[in-house]
Length: 223
Image 1 (cartoon, helix red, strand yellow):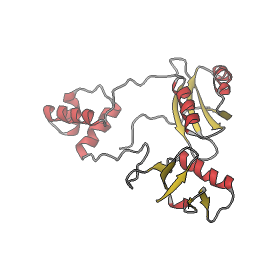
Image 2 (cartoon, helix red, strand yellow):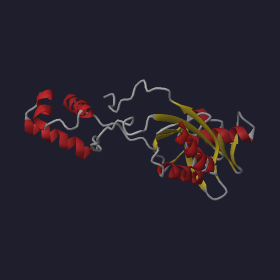
Image 3 (tube, one colour):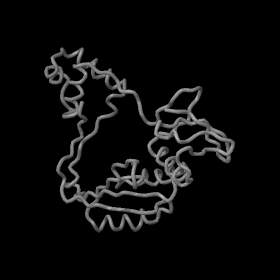
Image 4 (cartoon, one colour):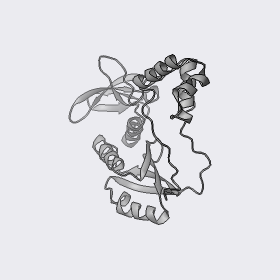
């Protein structure tokens, strides 16, 4: 990683760049390139850096990792508890204690510690979407017109406002976002696309794929 000074029209900011962007350096005119002379190429590097959270403000020479929390260390018993609870969160404390080889009180305390630490965020019910009439799964890739912070924040607010979108990921590559939607049928997605996606002024292109069948869907994490 390398720190450089990026001089924008509004303010001068110190940024952290990955080693692959060593072609960038500070000059009185802003960011220039040593090996790459064309401005559009530099802009593509900067857009990709922002998209992957490579370009991060630094304070007092420290590197901040956006959206990446350090992994918590867990022991064998905690791993067993989490594995069992991922399969059935309604298991009784007595049965859970028997499965992991603990007595009832220590098992209860261990689970409470996992809840307090945030490793267990919440308990939910996993529903059968097909029985609820949501048998169609659609994957949608969005490409934005621009990549400044105001645009991405606005798009993400729109995405959070729609319950049909159950998952959303910011991507590297040609697309900026991938959405996962559960809907009753393809006609419902056609309405969703025309009434919502195509009306977003920040979106340049929309590419959709309809899933034919679900090969694997697992809510348990591989711990």
